[in-house]
Image (tube, rainbow, N blue to C red; front, top):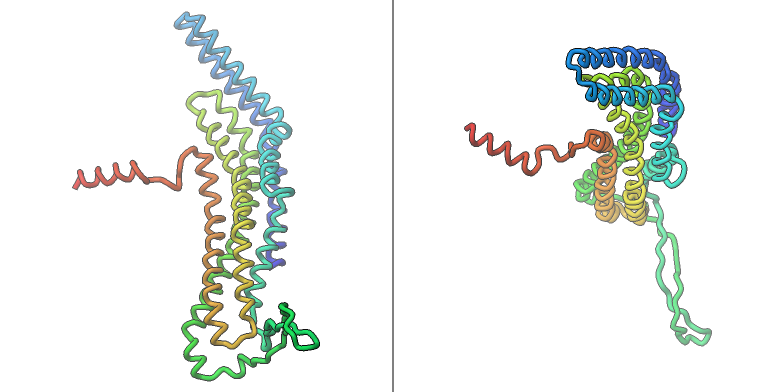
Length: 337
């Protein structure tokens, strides 16, 4: 699993380095486009002034137009400096703050990989240690009121001495245990892979946005095409939120789900080495809980793109059709029928 993660990280690192090289590709074209659009809009306002003769309105419109062009020109001339730092660096700083230090996806991914390996290597031993509390006595045989533990290893030969009837009796529980373990493994692997992909995709989407930005930003000076700039700005914010929300979700997983992993794995490990019937009768509940907890973690990570799009789009995408909207649709449907 570590090799797979390192390969994926190397792949995304190569893609990000190539994407970073494209960020300033269209800056000069964007400045030329801004000059052309600014001149066209200024000429149009001047023509309307010559026809209407409304100089105060012409002066206010041209002043707003000049300020807008100046702001957009400042954005384009500081594209790789202030603008890049404002969106990319600040988003990375937010991710680092959520992570409690450096937002390194490899460290957290390796933690979950360790949990996966623990589940996969959960074989039962042939011996286990049994400890009992023994009272302490003086040399004269008088109880001292204290106890100590007397531990000894007991050889079960659980797998070798399992009878056919015991195997048949525990077969449903064995199948349920194996199913729960498979679900837990799949959910934890999805949690790791989705986290790595979402974090990296946020950076890749930022590179794409900064590559296309210089030819989309100038259209803000032309009122019918202002939506191009607004959509670009929404895309940049959404891409930056991908990484931040992914780290918030992973923080929830690490502080809530991973401790649940460890507690449940300890309960499974506590039954290692005991007879097969006792093992499966006690381990399957813990493994079912582990599968549930792992599925919750994978679900959290799966919601990151939708949540980022929700905040960037300004609407509750996850609650679409809920409440008043759903009631209105039902009423319209009943009226039509």
